[in-house]
Length: 184
Image 1: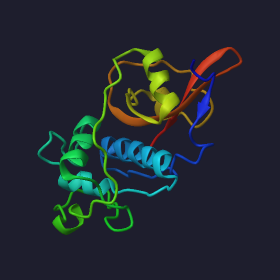
Image 2: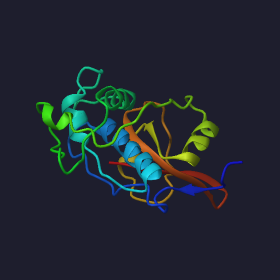
Image 3: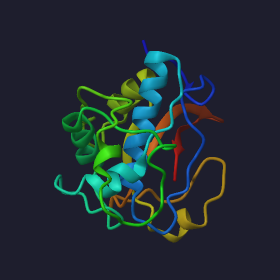
Image 4: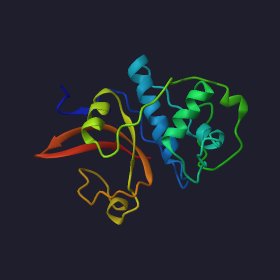
């Protein structure tokens, strides 16, 4: 039985929102946020991790640093690399740069796998989010989304997926179902 609602922020499993700036690194922010949350759920400790390591070092997996990438490629990189470094030791610069091999070898938090939620299957996503925050892709290019500030987004939900975020909860308010999403 699924909980009626969940908000991982209330459980301390969501790090403060970070700003990706003018770099198209949402894919790295989404993946890192998910790994930070899972690590907090497992260890009880919130360790902020390095998006910059993914931007600079995950270039063979199909990701292109500030020119975009995929969360799956980020997870693959973290698995193959044996982990990822902290934000403090490999700080975010919002620009492409050369991979710092010494920092890349500092494997502070690791994962051993990941699983894709079936496309357009809200029940499966709800099941997954009941256990942990989940990286998701949304259409964020529309004017309504660009002007969104807070509350339940009631604009059109498109299918031209162009932005990586993290589903950190769900619930129902005034008879309307909603997702809680962490942006960057």
